[in-house]
Image 1 (spheres, rainbow, N blue to C red):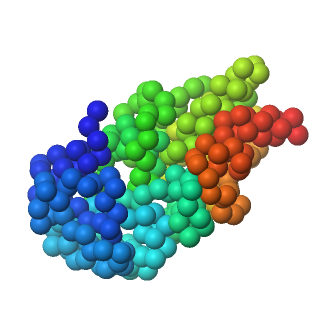
Image 2: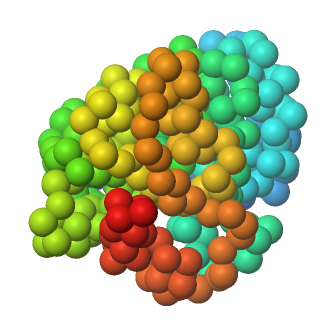
Length: 300
């Protein structure tokens, strides 16, 4: 399987409109300057400058792919994303590194746990949350082919599951079926939700596991089906409760006049910095803890 860097280089070689940009965040794209020449631009630690420049390039027919730490990309440059990219609906692609728990050992200033809420607030902004490297690579050609701006929660971890469906914008991946509980999730948390599924099935429960993949557009039918066919929906996300998947699901249910029991598994504040495995366990976001929370909700 190629790396993210290899794929981006290949796509850029095939389409000379693609320009790769970074705000001194080269971890996943170190080799691209030599391969892309003047179509690789590092603005330094200046996220606002990067977005302003990207908007200008997009107005000239380019497709900028901008890289920065997710928290600084979505917070520090928010006004520029909203005003320069969002209002004009320019095809600028925003790639946020170490979102959510992937920030692991970093403190609150580096934890992007409100990024989805911020990007949802910008009209027309697509939001893609790959579960792993395989899904990231499958998503990028689709993302670059759209005319809309897009925010990507970068995730190049080893495959979380064996993916069963090709990537499509607005199309969820249903990995298991069951009528007791539906686990709705995205990104990094698919790995832990799948472990939770295994724990729950070992207790005799029937579990539907849904990898939503894109939060805008979102697969409304998958959410409504979960509500109609499950005793409980659990939304599992490494994001604040407000503005993320739980909010999206509630909005869908209200808009469609559907009543359902929903258990939100989300953050209520910044998480304790630690190695990823330890951070997940401490915050009760590991598979076993998620399963225990679901069982508690079913018995309530």
